[in-house]
Image: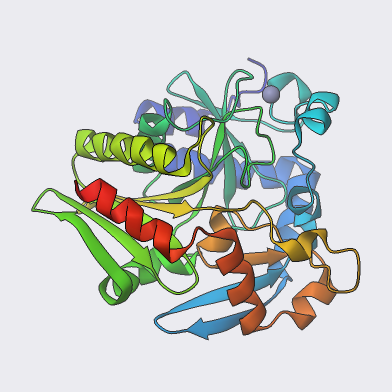
Length: 332
Ligand SMILES: [Zn+2]
């Protein structure tokens, strides 16, 4: 594959199974070789941001004009079928280089970054975004990138801007406030579903977000718990397609995986579709819900308030009754 980098230092890292440093090196090299990425990183350095403090956690908002295409992406089947897939190898810009992972995924740098090092981990062939049979891949990826990065997944109907091409993303740990605040949020707002020495599963409603957390050092336990969640939740939502979820996977050598599954009722809030001056271009996906909420238009960034953030977040999540039902069903 001519997309793959021939850098020897990266090759050495890959041979040592050190994908975190391979990724870091790839990002540095690509910034030198690829103007679009270099411009994207320059513009990220000057983005405006502000922060809203809630009870026990914060939400940062970021004015990031580079995210316009992604935020406003048309992801309906007709629009998707009419565009060239921007994740297929043959459509990548000639300067873009990648690293092969496990003979399945290609690690690529995202030229419209939110993280200072932001990657797309794209499947080597064109096949739909889907988590149920790729969740194990996500666990391996997040372990292998865990020295510096968290791995995220956006469902095909709630945030993936290429719902037709399987991909994950990776970005610097601790950019999303939830990486750091998780335990405090869990202690304050979590309801235990299951807990022993090997596995901890909680249902959490922090007032803005409703999510399930799974923590374990044991990969099989995480996978089995996720599969059980997926089945129960699909039945509860009466979904034949993938239920709307965004996932953040955070791995630490000492504690293992921490999976956060955001439970979505809606892809985009009503203000996204408004045609008057109340319109706001905001399209929450995993990174936004993890606490870095991106606004590609300056006027939206300027007038966003804590109350509006609260309203937008609440609107795109399932309600408390549903979370309670899921918690009860998972306990049984
Ligand atoms: Zn594709």
